[in-house]
Length: 299
Ligand code: SAM
Image (cartoon, rainbow, N blue to C red; front, side, top):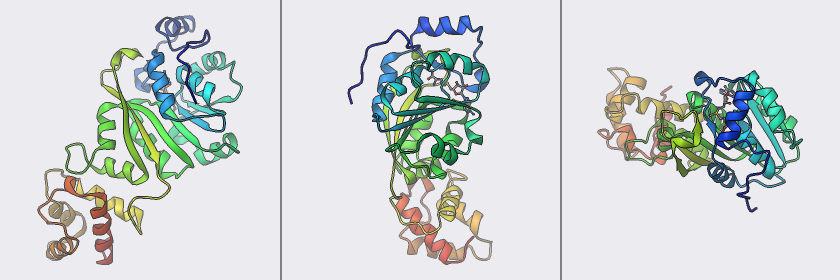
């Protein structure tokens, strides 16, 4: 679908329109809720294009603010659901979304929502849902982990987040940014950086750099893991002290002084040198290692 660059009169994502709305509603933005609103149409276009929406698709937005992104989603998607925590924004959203009856707003904290129930209620009959958002930065990771762990029927997640977190989500083994977050995200998705975003496209400007990341949700994980919870425990334990070896981190978590010599044999049998650091292991190596530790009786 082609995406129009034309700004329509009802669009709020311009500096003057956003300032006018905030002034008219006497609204002071809350830093504590991560309220940095987008005022640049080109960035909005890049975000919505990356989500690959269409009239048969649904879009879930977390934190619509005054509706800058919501309006663009509503122009492309067949159904839009936006979840906003700040009650003061609801009357403004009523105005900005007035031309789009297929867009609904739910008031509440996204982390407390029963998302499967909201999906049944709002996205029945759509052919795939994308999460598209300029996320509140103070809870980026909990939101993404909730979306992934609840195994919602998602096509992709296209979100604006802190650049530093985007780098960690997309990092490859052996790099300084690679860690348990990279593995958690890449177990569920293919991660790709869409664009880096200057601070000047927000009101007010945030004090961190931002990036748009696209997470294409996988149909199945890229590695065979019998017990996901235990796999992620092994991954977490391996990064508890980044500068320590995989042997030292895993010994501290799963072995006693008397039994820790067994760990060396397990690592070597998995083809992993005990002196390596957690940040050098691929997801396949973690899968092999967690299966071997579990077979050994580790819990
Ligand atoms: N989408 C708008 C835009 O791009 O201009 C606003 C984005 S602003 C970065 C984040 C939005 O998330 C704010 O509107 C804020 O009130 C909302 N928010 C913060 N915490 C939230 C939560 N726990 N649940 C739902 N919305 C939240």
